[in-house]
Image (tube, rainbow, N blue to C red; front, top):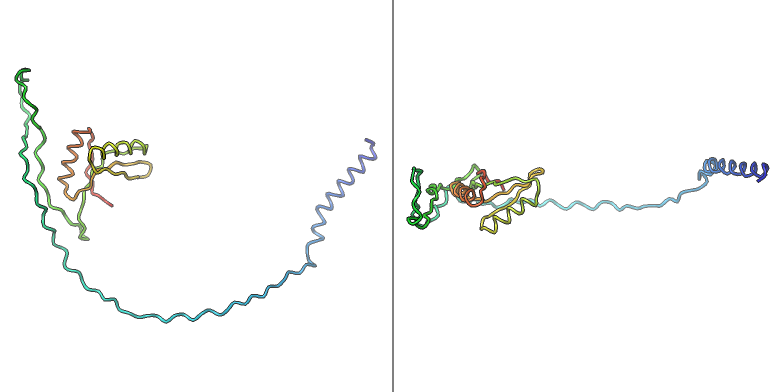
Length: 192
């Protein structure tokens, strides 16, 4: 390529760049008129008249009395064992297993809080970072016949069993789960 041809191409590129920069400044659209759209907004409708009424309320009957206690079936006799130093029996003297459960706790009546709502108790068994582990434990408990549910608290998934309005029932449940599943839980107030 000859030097003269290179100068012409370079000059053309410079002129093209200058035109790209300054041409939009010259053609800014001053001669263009925007169309004016006439809008007609109708006046606001009249506000409907206010309806005045007085609610008909009748006070509820007094609900501060506790409900009558549920009828309890006759408790089956439970054999309580006390720790004693006993010699191990010979193999020929072994008798069928005798249940060694603790004596049942006395049932306490349901309690109402200040708003008249029954206070319920639940048993927190475990907290897991992995939601899958919590779900597996819940499935095992449900399969065994317990009312198990999960709650999410920040990054932890907590496994609960219950609730029940009698704290003594939850305490008995705690003892059973400790025996059957080797889980020692915390008895907490149930908050829906």
